Image 1 (tube, helix red, strand yellow):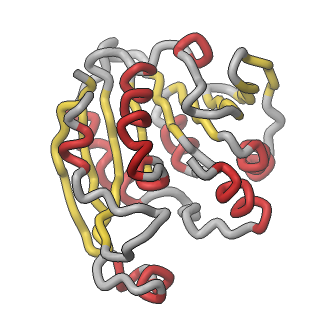
Image 2 (cartoon, one colour; image 1 turned 45 degrees about the vertical axis):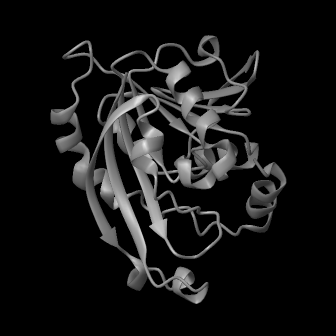
Image 3 (cartoon, helix red, strand yellow; image 1 turned 30 degrees about the vertical axis):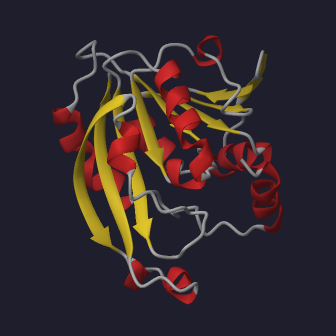
Length: 221
């Protein structure tokens, strides 16, 4: 991972990857996902992991669904920005592999996702990945998915959004082999694919002629 690249993006405020207001795809597909995958303890809130979360508004949406949300983000500036924009002061606690900021049922751990251990976050029932896998360089993808599997229980749900494009570079990286990659640790189904290149002039300016946004549902093996 090019940690310096992301530190610089946050420092300069170049946050084109941050979806203001949260992901429309999450809101469109959430209830369908819940029907497709049922938490182990029906009727009780589950615990959802949001890797490489930035200051995503999707975490607030998930918390409003009654889930306990645990984000992980190595850029501490992003963590502080999330709570500042929410207008709350989180509790701060040192962990073995980072610092946990928590308010009500939402926590963000400021630390390296690849160093986080299960003891830092507790049992995970579900994973929400919007633009996390596509931020990981191709060579790091197997390690990233292995880490997701190690941090989640068997049967844990996966809601993932990936991209397929012809930019030729990233991030965001194209993941045309997402089904095969996910199959290493998850049983997955492709739910939808929409070409959003006309809605994203920044990608057309970079040379893209197609930019598919793909929604996946999965279940940890």
